[in-house]
Amino acid sequence: MRTIKPIYAVLLGFLGAGLGYIYIGRLAYAVLTLLIFAAFFSVVGWAGIALGPIGFYWVLALALCWALFPLVHSAMIAKKIKTVPKKWYSHWMYYVVWIITVGVLGNFVAVNRSALFGFETFSIPSVSMAPTLQRGDLIMVDTRTMTKTSPNVGEMVVFKASHGSPGAFFAKRIVGLPGDIIEVRNNALVRNGQPVEENYIKLSEHANDRLKNYGPTVVPKNHYFMMGDNRHNSNDSRFIGPIEHSLIHGKVVHRWFAFEQGVQWGRFPRRF
Image (cartoon, rainbow, N blue to C red; front, side):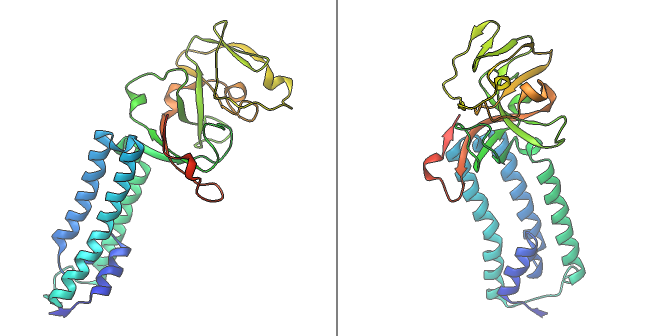
């Protein structure tokens, strides 16, 4: 028999999800903790619950509760039973193996979260999409819709850079579909010869002529023309060219938090 202490169960639980259960001799509980956590986010992604602001808040709250539950539960068991029989995994070496395993699995989920769960959050680092998206806005992106349907004009999307900053993500608005003729005349967007009403853009009084006028250009097949709402302060398709469909990561569906030099309470939540 060995003596167990609640504080150790809590501390080990912080080091690795479910490790507190292993410390108190409850290996099945530890495995169940990981399985339930994975199943929870899989169901959330499949059902699209997080794609609405309120739903996402509930997901965060439930995830936090489930993360804290094993810590409290393992500590309560340790306080109640005080001693446990020595198990084959009651050795620091297996604790290390568990921590590494959880870390590897966590890294795999983090890298593949968009494919596994169908949603992903991003933080806006610039003002290129102002006033719609401001620096510090936290947005939710639907990463599954674009694999099933084609984007439409007016939608905001997140895409990967193909050059300049390979691997970086950008948020812009789609203003042109494959085959469209895009032009900017004195700050006004013209698509296929017709002026487009855009009540969401921001213009600068001191912009140069290249920013006020552009094109015309034809959007290639399987490509999309992107522009920032902050029309005179955006590195978009006018400079980097149209974006291939395969580089579009997902559709911006809502803003769930806003933090720029403090919480911006008036800027969330908002569905787009």
